[in-house]
Image (cartoon, rainbow, N blue to C red):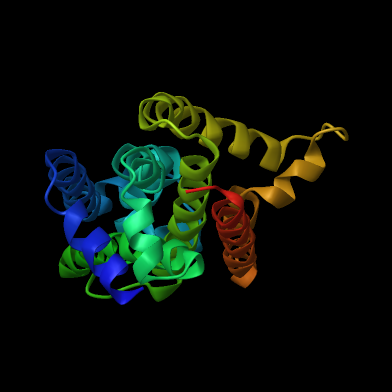
Length: 229
């Protein structure tokens, strides 16, 4: 599991797409923190919003495009192994649960490093690191990583997951935010299945997102277990 996680982690840093996304994250963090005082003057913000204004740019960016970024980099994390038959080699060296968890941890630590550095950049201007916002962002990314792995397991061809990843990456946040605030009684219950409803709460409800991510990861493992590799 450790070897799989390490390979996935360092593999993500080698692609041009990863470097572009990292640059976007860092630029969003830098400009959001640098011009936060201007937003405080222009906008009418609550006390809580004013406290978090330095990390607002990064938070909004990941709320809207986080899933697109993750799917853009990791949409083929599992089905690439199956498509290229390298999964057979992995299975001889590790259990299917270790493969699933190893892939997840490798991707998760990649994003953990990126977000940590982003918050360090923000702290230069904010003079603090908001651990609550940091935890919210990481819970959101944890859910999105688990969802990406599930999609990679559901769809056998990497080319198809790349296409669906773009559609889902753009559409899921829009639909997720809509169902989180809709009053439609037929659809409002779905808000409990997406992370955006829990992130909107000013408490630790976002921890439920980690439970949802665990369920998605469990489904991924069960599908891999049933797959004839």
